[in-house]
Amino acid sequence: MVDTVSPKPTACLALADGTVFYGHGFGATGRCVAELCFNTAMTGYQEIMTDPSYAGQIVTFTFPHIGNTGVTPEDDETADPVAAGMVVKWDPTLASNWRTTEELKSWLTRTGRIAIGGIDTRRLTRAIRQQGAPHVALEHNPDGDFNIEALVAQARAWPGLEGMDLAKDVTCAQSYRWDEMRWAWPEGYTRQETATHKVVAIDYGAKRNILRCLASAGCDVTVLPATATSEEVLAHDPDGVFLSNGPGDPAATGSYAVPMIRDILDKTDLPVFGICLGHQMLALALGAKTIKMNHGHHGANHPVKDNSTGKVEITSMNHGFAVDAQSLPAGVEETHVSLFDGSNCGIRMTERPVYSVQHHPEASPGPQDSYYLFERFAEAMAARRG
Image (cartoon, rainbow, N blue to C red; front, side):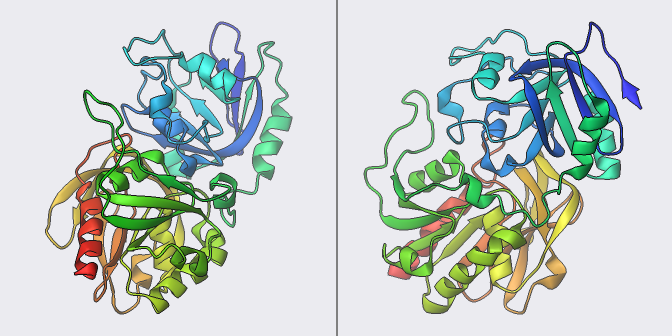
């Protein structure tokens, strides 16, 4: 099955089932192979492309106006794009925004990321929903010369995200301090100068805006690599431990992350807070299991119910694995649930200030309904100190 566009296509997207989409290439030239997902957010394409949780994935944007606000270094969630590629309906237009410092096309070219436009993203999204997130090969060749058999073969040969530990690829190389707070008009980003809580954040692929939210909640943040040991964590004498978002299969990352978390829980009474992959790491450490989802949750419009209050929060999501709520052990309860499919979105220990959520309360991009979770973490650390 082949989709064609005119004029002459300069990029193509080949799915492992043999389906091929032709379009207009922009950004870097070359070829990449990854899992294909779709994101339903209407804003924040730069934050999405630089979110380390998208390692090993090509992102299809369901919103057509991608590139219209350009890019700015202030919106990067990490230094460079991490998502392997971009699929959009319309080719990006010239940027129109007062914060713009660079066009999307030139940014993708400079940072080595491949993109394809002119794609029927509605049809592609339906295919992902019905068949599950496919393995794909994306190629941008200005000459329009494509070896389709080779592309399909590469897509079929790609091993997939199950069993893949990608946190080691995106984590920091060494520890560092973080004190930058959330962006606010008119000052922009400001520094935390009156922190009252010492937090060690484990970087499985941490987004900068999560660290900013911790700083804005009064935290003096020290970031450690994903492979940090419990001894290295406790050497900083923290008031709390944060477990960040990140990519890949949680069970694979858990081979080294879970023993560290269990050690922290066994040796201390420190508050622990996790987001996304950090949520899954905590669940594994407590004895639960994780599962691969059909096509995952990626967007800024996901309704999540807080079981303790009955409140429904509109949240940002980005995950292809989920905690199996049926596997939660005694002493651990489900706190949040997705109203889209009933999947688990939060847990907590019933007798200790240890909790995590699957969604992204830092809202980058997305709504800020769940920001209170950072304040709850700060309150738990303050209560422990008395």
